[in-house]
Image 1: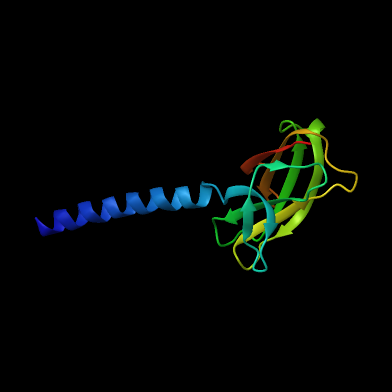
Image 2: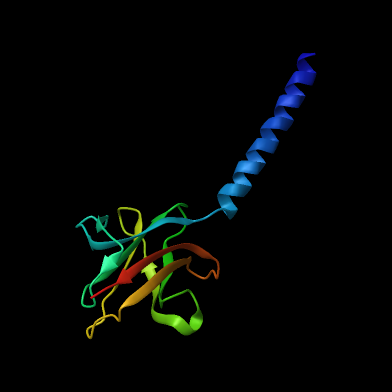
Length: 138
């Protein structure tokens, strides 16, 4: 009886471990993308908002969810996520000490009014990890 119970528990433990290991490796690596007006000295986003004026600087921050992810690519879009709508691309965005990838969008001549989207990708990957949206209004 004890040997059978141990064998069943071992199989269950292996199945559960495999399930969680698979989900950890294949799940989202960058999460919780937020838009803010600023970033503090440690690299944490502050002053969350999704409405800006044309001359404002827009900050995007996303939390890393896997310890091995150290670089990312951030892509900014006007209106919707489509290659033809790209406004700015930041390659090699580095993870900061606070555990965030931070990027900013600042256009000297000002942003046009409308809806914007920002996405983040793990470096070298084409799968979008998280997306945030914001609006520019006069």
